[in-house]
Length: 310
Image (tube, rainbow, N blue to C red; front, side, top):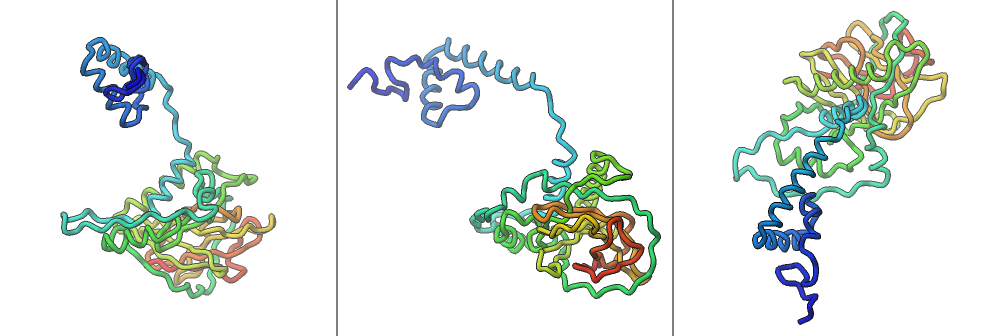
């Protein structure tokens, strides 16, 4: 047996102390870690050195200046929370669900899930007064109380979805990309913080629900809302970009007609979302139309999507 044969995982002729730094940083593989721990059991000096290096590693970690997450990152996390099916607690071993293999990401899914593509849309201030109009018939949508589905069905639904889709059965997607607009009333950080706070309120509401459908072009769209808090948010996937003289416009559509709820644009790819302006009433239909830049007093085109709340 050569001098380099391993004994307790450490090669003879090597200095076991060479592993001390990596051990303190939890950077050793299982075999090397076990070997070094065998060395620690035999050497008091090694134990002292390991403790000192561990303390140093902790001190270095604490010395790093904390980084405040950007509002955009917070907003993207809130969007994912709203989009992820909430599973009820398992009652016990009998309620365990068989593991389901996680899906492979579709091409482009990683790009779509980047935080910068998940920013809420920036909006122009409304300068027009609402007028009444006939409410368009909403497309059929599936309404799901968040957290109300059975655990197994919800989990199965989630894992069968591509990674790029944030809202499982509802298909959340890329509605609104942040952009700068002249005369905007909010700076970017304020707007993103307000959007994140609004979405968090919807997601935390005891009556939070979602409904899903597709746009006229087949893009999955999801409405999440709380009637109790009079808030709603819309998510759409890969909504096509518009010419510079056009905007997408959101509407609350009820018995009294359509009420403007904000304008936005889209990059044409990625996953982002938008909390509607104003106050939602239970039973309102949330619609989106293509309007002249800056928005209209009433819809001038047929809605590309309309989802009814309950």
